[in-house]
Structures are given as C-alpha cells and as structure tokens.
Length: 322
Image (tube, rainbow, N blue to C red):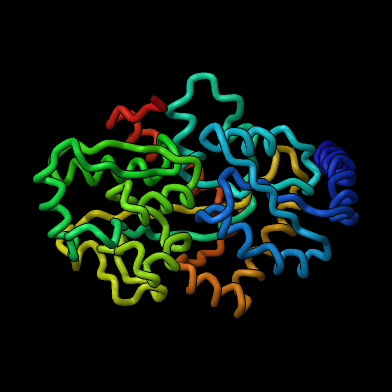
C-alpha cells in the first residue's frame, strides 16, 4: 500500500503543471488552421464554430486558411505548433486517412502528431453537374457518361480526397473510365462546374447550395441514406437509382500531440456545448451538414478507423498523387 501511495503522489505531482496550464488557458487568441481555401466544407466547419467557441472560451478565435500540398501545409504547421491549446487544426477525413496511404515521406503522423479534440460536422455529398448539361436525373447522367467513355471530367479538392474516391467509385459503378481533375479546394472546382468546364463534382453541399439554388449547378442526388433539409427536393442516391452509393465526409478539431488533457477536455466540452446552440444548429442545417458531437474517446475511435478504412480503399483502387 505505501508503494501505491507514493505512485499516486508522483502521478498527482506530474499532473500539476498540466492542470495549472489549463487554469490559465486560453491566455491569447486561438488559431484554427484550415488546410483548404475559403468556401469549402472544411472552411465552413471551422467558421460554423468560430463565434460560439470564442464566447464559450472567452478568447478570440481566428480561422487561418493555409491551402496547398494536399492539406499538408496546414496539417504540418499544426503538428509542429506548441501543444498549449492555442493552435488547433480543422482536419478533413480525406487528408487524415488518405495522405498516410498515398505519401511515403509524410512529415506528420495522424496518431503520433495529432490529438483528437472533437467532431465538427459530418457532411453527406451531393452529386453535382453543370446546369447546362442535358441530363435531368441521375439515371440520365449515368447513361450520358456511359455513352462517353474517357470523355467525362470529374473534380476533386485533391488526390485521395473523399471527392476523388467518390469519383473513382462512381466511375466503377457506371462501368466506364472518367478523367480526374484535382483542384486546391472545393470553391475553384465548383466555379468550373458552374462554367461547364467540369461535368461532375461529388462534394459536400455546404459550398454548393447557393449555386444550386441560383440555377448554375444541378444537384442530381444526395449520396446519403436521407435527404438533407438544405436541398429537400433532391433525392437520395437510392431514390435516384443508385443504391448503396453513400459518401460522407467528416471535419474535426485536432490539437498538437502533447496538448494537456485538461485543455483538450475543456475544448471538447465547448465544442459539444456549441453544437447544441440554436444558431449553430440552424446554420448547419442551412449548410447541409450534420452535427454529431463526440467525446474525445469517440473521436479518437472514428479517426483511427478512418485511417484503416480509407487507406484500404486507396490501396485497392491504386489511387496516387500523380
């Protein structure tokens, strides 16, 4: 028993610095690094929580967009930041699970270098085409693609992204090859879809709702089990004739590994409290995303599973960065 008591005393002593640091946190603005440009699902998720977190934590929250290198510029910066709770990463599951499977010399490790904080949003994907194309339904578009093997271009926000994987799976489901055109984010890709230069983009609705409602882009289906409130007239893929084609993305907050546990717990509690606020829920519905608050342990389980599942899909389909 005395031996156990000494261990307990030592553990308590070691925990004091972290607890003390948490009590004084935050002591300056909190920066949320976003690995994509403004206008896409990752940016939407960060800004959805920005004001609520600032109020709940009593500190300014700054969104810092750092696109490029398939998300690695922002992710590496986050991984190398001081683990003091003042720098966070708004991570996209396509990068979290995809980049380690595609890059041999990756400068960050999703488990070793990043600590999960909590889920921001889960986003079903919409199947989008230019409004000027003849197909009016998903079945008509599938026939349109079949008649033009190798001639249809589909966009993504980068190699290995969920949009890229969705395009590969769509091509396989239709049975003809298509051409992948990667972009540095959803916003520039949508511009080319609206302009008729890209025939297909399977992406999160939040960045496309205005274009759909404005008649620039046509939403053929929602690749999810249920319709979304933001686009209630758009059928699910099952309703539109493509059962089992479901594509979801998640966007979550992470911190540099080594961030004190009390700080992570306080961040997680603030995220879950923010997700319950009426204004956050309203904006999420308008943006076509789902709120699924999680504990740190639940987020960690989801993140680890994504590394395994997404990595397997990438390897099985020979998806590379080239």
